Length: 411
Image 1: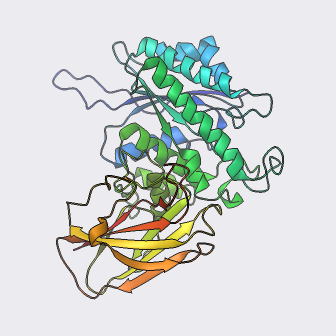
Image 2: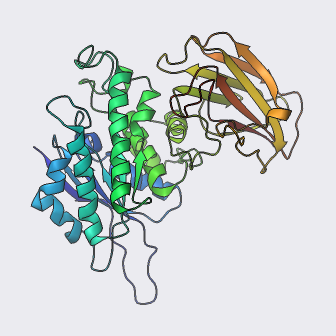
Image 3: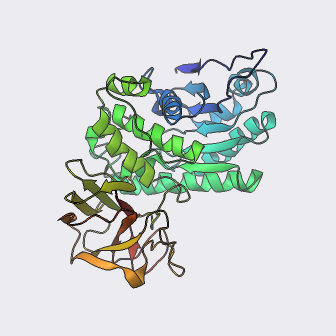
């Protein structure tokens, strides 16, 4: 068993004339899914992303123990003592990030999801006894990759394992909110982002469970959105010459293209209140690209006369493979997008003025649309959204599911 207790940033220096900007105080409880790559773990990356976004550097305290469940973090005297001993007198925790064992939120391996949930509440209570306004951020873990011994027993497919883990992390959030109030907890849906990678072994270490550097980055991005309530697509690390965040990525073989691709996925699985044009939230993905850039799920792209625009609608994990697909678009004044449709808020385009870009009788293969923009309309934007004519698990809509919409801005 490996225990890690590290403070990853210097505490603000109190000066006679001024006080340095105070960053957030973040406490991490978890295991090797959080610290797997030394010096490039989730906490360190959350800190670097926050600084790259212009926030004061957060104080990071990582109370991490390899291989344990939340019960250890909730009850071990040393883990509890971290809460009161790691900050200067008078300071409080802003968030506690809580990550459980790979099987802990499932009934497999001798685990009980009810115990997992109770321990999440207990950890939150421990932290709030010191910092009454502290918020719990549940670090929703992921299903193991295809090829794992977990398939075909006890689960037939990764999506089945994913659904159990996801459901119990969401229930843990609900339990924390019931105990401490509606604003006391959030779910950081890291596992949903891994689901958009379709549990491909290429994103994992050789054990098909631990994250490789790219997945660690995806996890940190998702947790950043949950803590700061901001998307990551608008953050642009400087790669030439490299800033601290870009240097950290380069140390793991990751570059600008990796950042752009993963940022789109992290934003896609952020809380709906954070996403600019949130759709249903199911296993359906809309990506766009302009010029020679790669496709991304980031919410906004720039274009002008002659720009090549590409749009791709994908069924993820086979969920919508046999559904009929539509791509719809709507022109609006930049800065004044249409609001959610009153009856079906997952519709983000204005239906009376929409145009049908493309249709397909199946989404077994990605549905694509491309155009060389013939004109420029500065001050205007197109909003593009994908539809699958199949029921949505997330919204309960029995007829259709929507992607998040993407804005294409004329400049």
